[in-house]
Image 1 (cartoon, rainbow, N blue to C red):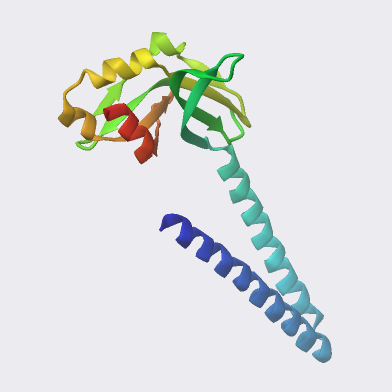
Image 2 (image 1 turned 120 degrees about the vertical axis):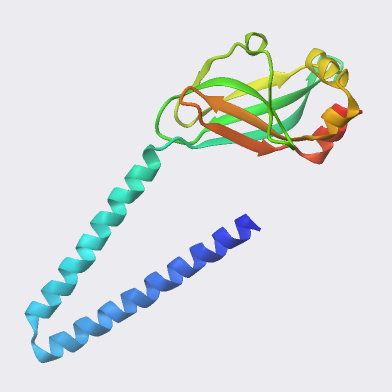
Length: 184
């Protein structure tokens, strides 16, 4: 639903820009017919100021951290093309403009508690450069440890989270196929 609203708002933004551009041209034509150059320069100055403020706010947003997390199934293959080991791959992509240090990752349960995984096993902390990504593999050993937990705890897993050095927590909903794989 959130994605749908974002697309609708983006469409409305473009429609508003087209209408504003049409009104600007209409006002310029009216002012040119009257020979009112002071009005034309005032409107043009106002539009340039709005464009400058929009550009500054866009640059501020670009400077903030932007992490995307994806969870996928991954398999290890050998020469005969038979899968030997099943992993869960957590792909952490840095879509921002500054380097980010990933300190930990784990699960978020339905009651809001964080279940951290052992950072030493995943070589954390790790740095993610701008426009780059890292993969964290949740191996069969980790899955066996998770399956040893009681069933109620396993069913309450809702999200996977990644936290950075500043303390921000980025989360991603766990897909059903991976949740079923973890529980079974």
